[in-house]
Length: 159
Figure 1 (spheres, rainbow, N blue to C red):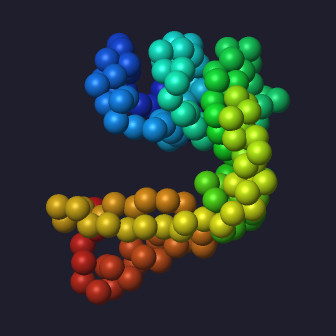
Figure 2 (figure 1 turned 180 degrees about the horizontal axis):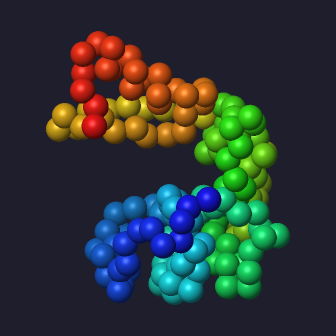
């Protein structure tokens, strides 16, 4: 679980993303805990009703308060539950088997079995302007640490 005091505050995040909305099919809310800012998130979600929305939350639905539930119900796809290292596996969008994929809006209700049983696309690594960028969800224990170790072993310096 993330510290709710971390992060940056934006007075109107919608103004930042609005020019790009016609260029995307959907928006994913993850990193930190999006539901820590439920009032602001609800306000933003109300401004983008026709955009696909996906949420990654460390909470389960039954742990949410009323305002968080209102947010939750506006998402097309939700990955809910805490990551548990001992249940780590090769799962699409999930780091561990205890996490649940749901479709509160029912938009993807008929695809939930497919999503739940699909394997991860894995971890993709890119180098952009001498910076190493990771995409995806690691499927093996310590996968990122092992990659970093190998790069250092081969003489590369990582920050």
